[in-house]
Image 1 (cartoon, rainbow, N blue to C red):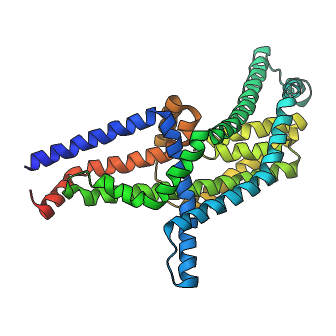
Image 2 (cartoon, helix red, strand yellow):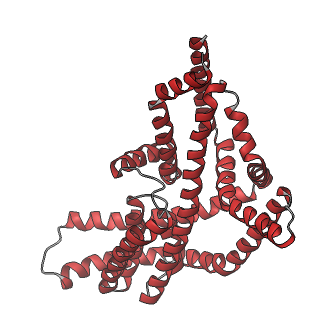
Length: 358
């Protein structure tokens, strides 16, 4: 009988893994669910706040549906305000950057010649100059096209009629019935495995919620500090640089390095000294981020070795591109939790047998 129950357990694990793989491969399902999950983690604290305030002020419980709708309304108001304050000037700077891109490339070529003829006594071989120019062009093209395509993609996704309704719909029921959905999933497994599966889901929920909220807060802080720093130093297109810093903050280890390159190049088109100042600024910001902001915001929510993160970045980037690199850390953290519990599977089985018998 125990062998039958164990085989049933592993059969359901296999079916769950196959369902998860199918979910990842079907992008039309994948992205709405991922976006809804992120929105759920963002809006849940608002919902809980409204429910606590209502109980404190009226000594009555606020229905979950109303609290969720109030959270949606508050989120829409905040996003509308941010759109008016940030998005319009950001789009203006993006268009200006795209229009002046050829001039920036010409300035880069002139900068290489200046670096060879005036600023140093060293000869720069012609092949090295070609490589530098090509690198500047490719980095610039990638940065401008990447940011522009990202913003266009956001608007395309938001403008799709199906997803416009599907994402709020899924988010609403994630917020309302998320716990019930998890319990329903756990209940498909044999009874003596359910307590441990509940622990697994609780750990995953804790890690994902703290990571997403913390990462959003860190991105906002880094974007604001970067924008203020670039604006104060007179670097062109400070809002674009701030946006790049916010996006690359989601890619661990290599993201901030990549995000610094456009700022350094734009600073160099103004003055070589300014590019050095920008480099020093980014080094300082990263030290503040690593030793002050991240410990306070994220704590020890995810404990992954840098080597594991780099390998996961390579895998995620190869399979899913930039989106895969952004999702590398949370996905790897979830896999770490699953592997940890499966590693101690026999221990859990013994506990279950002692509690429930055969």
